[in-house]
Image 1 (cartoon, rainbow, N blue to C red):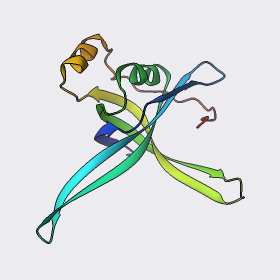
Image 2 (image 1 turned 90 degrees about the vertical axis):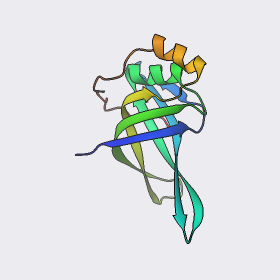
Image 3 (image 1 turned 60 degrees about the vertical axis):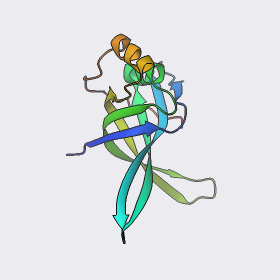
Image 4 (image 1 turned 120 degrees about the vertical axis):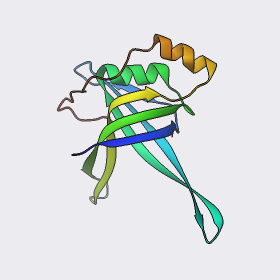
Length: 132
């Protein structure tokens, strides 16, 4: 099974683009904070993850979230590979967003939650190149 669940904070504004077919694609990064003790001292660690969403899910994420918003994410890991300009092979792992939930409890976000559609459907991905 390839499934990831995160509660994270969006780290930069969501970038929404449209593929030649007209399908939406959104790209953004999230930060997950971990606190633990090492030798009696509190240590804070932040991990960053790249997220990609497609179709109506991409449009909804772009509409209802922005930099700094807390978001619950369910997705799957995907390794992307490419050849850099210098000819070297490069790769990175992204999370393909399948579902999201609202986490922020602020008043303005509660209004957005009431207006936002529920994101419980499975996302179908197209075989098009991702322009990021």
